[in-house]
Image (cartoon, rainbow, N blue to C red; front, side, top):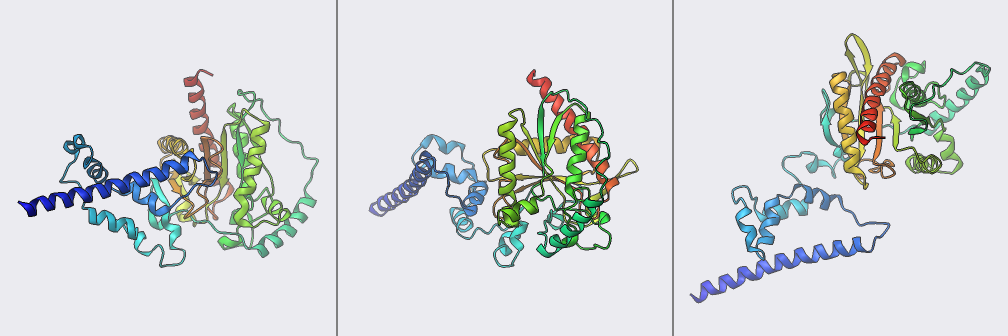
Length: 384
């Protein structure tokens, strides 16, 4: 009897230790958030663990002090405490091979991108790919772009811009990587690193301009940034890694001047080859597109919901046009992408390095059609 009594006391003490640790961690987290610090403590390991630890484990710990929780625990589904501790300490998840190799193989951490919605043919082997532009390529391209711009006939008349039904601009289109271009518009260029240009008629700015025009035709007021990010970075003595910091300044300035702007659309192009970025829909070629949502910002849930809804509408009208919705943290990308500035933000990638203007135009019109439907439905629901 004495031995049984000692075992009972030992078990109670262990449970109290578990619960005390739980309260300590909760108190620390509450204290940090209560201080409202600008720089928060973060850990990808803790985040990943909290997302994957089984609910029954937390209930088991709490039930040691709150007896009423015990009936709600399914003992058959509750993983062992030892397994939970192992997963937390090692951050290795048997069902995900990336966690075995992510810290051992250089560059493999880039594959931490989460696939929120997988488009046709999308898996871990076809994730979006971003290539940083070599400085020397951009410098040579600058000389070429200056010569081409000098030959441009500036006297050409601009088409009349329709007056939007929204009366004011509600969307802002910009490019954090304005140099991203497409090989079909760059004769002699063959690799992803060479698919860069400072000529806005050949780079991703041309896609943004076309999208703005299409939205305006559908009554949606939109403004568009044609800022040369390469030159602006050079002026500040910043590098490629500062591109989102630079675009953030522009976005904040525009939103301060135009309070009506709520939709932020950062447009890029992927570096994957044509076979992954092109599809045929009803006999017409389309440059496939996809959404990137930053997970490390306060508007993550709302922006993810927006991306999912637009992705769903796109796939219903144009099956196969989307490669999906991807979620990125600071471990495998910027993690924020200025999406904390609005709960209606999106990073949208049109096509890849090998897509041509016809394929891109088809996709731009498709997205404009779907976005306008989404926008006007939202306006009707809100009664504005």
